[in-house]
Image (cartoon, rainbow, N blue to C red; front, side, top):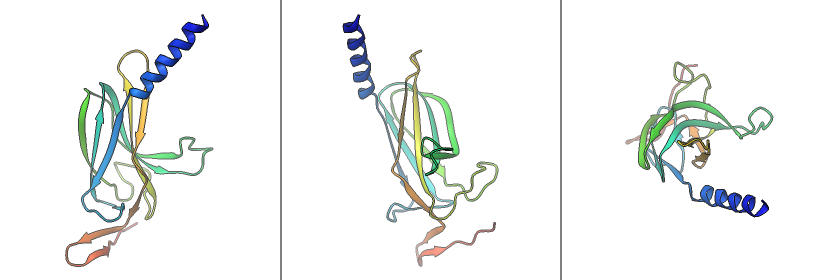
Length: 155
């Protein structure tokens, strides 16, 4: 009995180690890992098998009592989207303030990340989570003539 338990645990651990959903992003402009409010960002992923995917933007939270994962969801791009193994991408516009898309306002300097969760389509219910590096969101835009310039926001 013990041998079977140990063997099945090792097999599950090896399977977990082999599962992969790689996630990356590329903003419209390259300015030392900052993304501006209202900017378009291309989010790309690559998976090793068919998953039901859930993609969202989150903001970093230090309050582990209310946010045990260390982040708070800002906006869900899609959920339960079944995609075969391979590559995919999504063009996302960073929300400015609150509105129809999000009830959480992003403030200048907030640390944000993109998180992708993949749930295996069999009945195992195994989930794999990956997120990008944290990046600051700023209220600046790039102007070809002026470089950075301050945007004017209402509210």
